[in-house]
Structure formats: structure tokens, C-alpha cells
Image: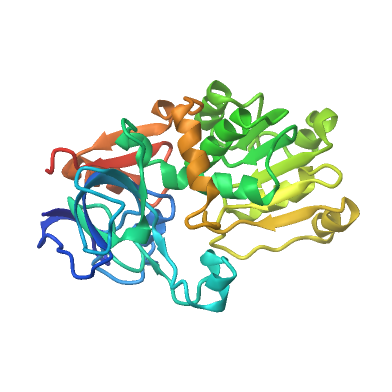
Length: 350
């Protein structure tokens, strides 16, 4: 089978590898259709942060079932599925308390083991979510990043009637913007430093946009003054500056859901830290996208949003490319963030 392989020197190659086969009764063989590049994959490629090399990345993929182990009775050949990349042990105390994302002995597809940037993959049944009939496989490849945002909204008790502010309008941020608008937010504000992302946010559901490269926290706070109560701020950019911005612009008793992963130390000055106390802010750490019953209501909610045509994916996609072109698109990033989702197209195999 063809596989896109990442090497330790940030080199990507298309390689012929043995096709995987079933080796356990709970396993499923999947022919992959689409597999997305995640923002978390970029440092694995360009900053030597993968657990091992060479590696096949990819944890945002969809495809069709080819065959199943004898213990799998609810999936059949031809069924459309999407990846649920975390595999908890389901035995540790964290798992018994349904805190699956805090499992002490987990595996993760496309990170701690090879992933979906290939023609085929074998995974546990628990790592697959069955898609409804006639559901788009391209939509299926977006299910995992969508559930990341939906998990944050769930932790915040939903967004109905809230003034939602999304800081960071990358793929997850854009999906949160659309989802919050569809789920009854009173208003949705997008903040980013990229004018293209802000223009896209306006197209897909944001009622207000601010460029934090040209507007400082005081400016944004003043402009959002009329919407300062019942705020839910969702930080998805994962930088020290945007976390501080979240605290500085927050209104009284705001909720702040921290989704983005920091890669550098965060230092808060006295005034910024004081906002947490004086405004009585609620900080919510949001890690991954799972709840009980496994894999969680976020996944079912994501399906509902798609089937109700509440989300628009086309504006979020930079490219859908076969392996060699996919490699060129990824290499051109040179370690920088994507401006739109890059997807590997394996529907033609090569």
C-alpha cells in the first residue's frame, strides 16, 4: 500500500509498505478515503516532536470498512467510518471515572502509533465511529476537529444565549464559530491576526471580527463593552499572547475555555492575573474531545450539525490532494500554520 511517511529530517516521502492485516478479534481493516493534516502534526513534521521516526501521521480520517475481526458485530464491509484517535485502556481509575482523555496507559493513532496518511489501516473497533448512510466521507474527515470545539462548548454548559468570542480562527476556531452560531449563541466574535481568516469567519457565522495585530486589548474590550456579560471565550490559537488576551478582554464572570496547546512558557503580569480574580473568571481546560458513553455526545452532536446542513466546509479547505501533491503542500508550510485545511485524498489509491 502507499503511505506518506515523515522522517526525522522533516522529509516526507510516499513509500510502498505492506498492507496491514487483522491480528485481534476486535480489530477492523479500513480503506482510507480522506485524511486531514492537523495543526498538531506540523511540529511533528518540522520540529522533531514526534514520538518516533519514521512515522505515518494522520488522526483525522474517514474511509470504508474492508473486514472485521470475529468480535466485531456492529460494523460490516462497506460501512463508512471516521477515526476516533484516542484509545484509552478503559481499566485505570481515570477511565473508570470516564476521564478518558486523562488515561494513564493510552494509545493515539497518528501520534503514538502510525496513522491514516495511507491507503489502509487496522484499528480497534473502539477507534471508529460509524457514519450515517449517505454521509459525506469528506465531512467524516472533519468530524474529529469539530468535536474538539464541541467538547469545549460542552464543558462550558453550551453556548445558548451567550456572547461567544473565538480567539484563533484556524480550522478548529472556524468550526467553533459555525457551531456556536448554529447552537444558539447570542453573538459570535472572531479574533485573529490573519485578515483572510477573519473575512472567512464573517462569511461563515461571525457577527463581529477584530484583528488583534491592529487592535490592542483595550480597543477590543471597549468595542465589545455592550456584549461584556454572559461571555464564553474560546481560545484556540495556543499562544501566550492569545491566552493573555483572553483574560484581558473578558467581561465580568466570563467563562474562558482554553483549547489551544501552548508550545512556549506563559508568563502573566500582575494586572493580567488580577483579571482572573477581580472579574471572577472561570477558566476551563479543554483537552481532546471525549466523554461518556464512549466516545461521547460531542460525536453525535457533530453528526447532527452536518446532517442539518449547519456547517460549511468548502471555505475551510485549502487543498484535497493525492499523495505526491499532498507532500508538496505540506512541505510548503515550512513549519508555519495552515491557512486552510490540507487533506490527503486516497480515494484513487495513488
